[in-house]
Amino acid sequence: MIITAGPALHIDIPKLAELRADQPTTLAEIVKRHIIEVLDTTGWRVSGKDGAAEILGIHPKTLESRMQRLGIQRSKKNT
Image (cartoon, rainbow, N blue to C red):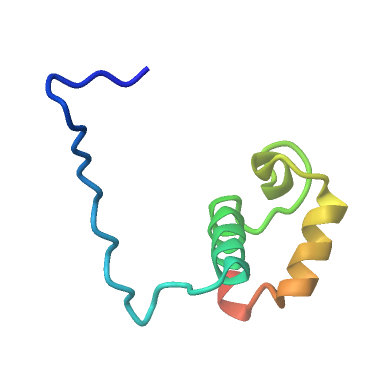
């Protein structure tokens, strides 16, 4: 239900933030960034209790497959 006090409904649409160079521009980049953030949170633990797959709500093999497809690898600084 939409309620308005007058004869016309006025909606303020928020302006989209300007894209910055460091912002992801594709869905794959957004997914990749999110997976990496979760992996960082778990200490790069993919499976098991409190692992990234559990937090993301997906099967560990699915997460491993997505990581491979998106080119996500644990770097030396993450060990």
